[in-house]
Image 1: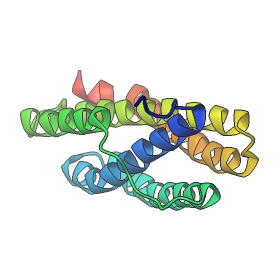
Image 2: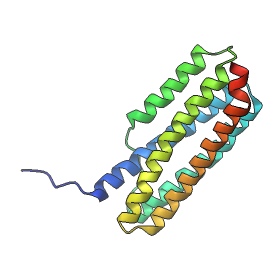
Image 3: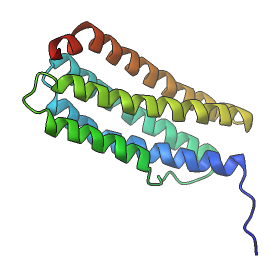
Amino acid sequence: MPGKEKTLNDLFLHTLKDVYYAEKQILKALPKMAKAAESEELKKAFETHREETEGQIERLEEVFKILGKQARGVQCEAINGIIEEGKEVMEDFAESEALDAGILAAAQAVEHYEITRYGTLKTWASELGMPDAAKLLDQNLQEERKTDKLLTQMAEARINTKAA
């Protein structure tokens, strides 16, 4: 017997679970990144983003409630790989002038992944007639964009210059 045809609703829920898992993994990784960073400015940025990530997880839980579903993640190999790559940079470049530049680049890879996911989810929520979910997802999207912009400014103004 063929299975039920998958819909955009199904894809939305799967992607929501994916980003929920990703945020939980990021929440675990941020303190390690802050500890490894040499720049006080970068440490502070990671600590601030950890607090934002907690709020983003809460908003995702609200979206699950809107859907009438329990908040739970599904393993995301993409974020696992991005985080693992960041760990390798922290190990391989420990004690190096390039450490902060590498950690910052790894953090931006995370941000770009999140920006992509939240942009997609926001659009799908709108298409599926879920304006409250779209608004919550847009809040997360805007925070991720703000963090990415901050990291770019830090890289261009100081971090990359120090590493060069």
